[in-house]
Image 1 (cartoon, rainbow, N blue to C red):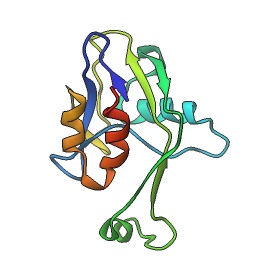
Image 2: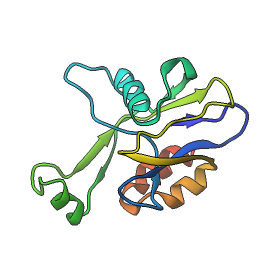
Image 3: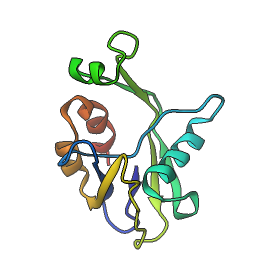
Image 4: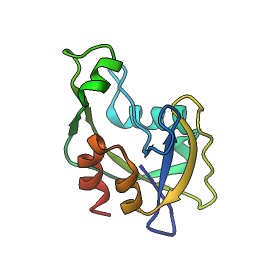
Length: 138
């Protein structure tokens, strides 16, 4: 998650595959990759924001998980083996208020600064638990 340096807002991204659905950048770890390195890599791949544009504020102290609903499990092609995702959350601060992401067009198509509560309300319901836990504490 990237927080605005002068307000309480966070960067939200609209999903390419689900117009009107907003979320934060996320992704999987590569073999042997440290979670912080994976977070920075995914942030850059999906938004164009590199490590020079953000500074780490805090790492959430535990892993957070959510389960996919059955229709998502089927779409992922692994209805039994993969039930959802477990994530490590990192809260970054933008080093400058003019940070302007360039969504990758594959995962995300748009972005905007939003209040944390707005993002909680606009993320798909099955991801909402971890979002409420982390964003609700901002």
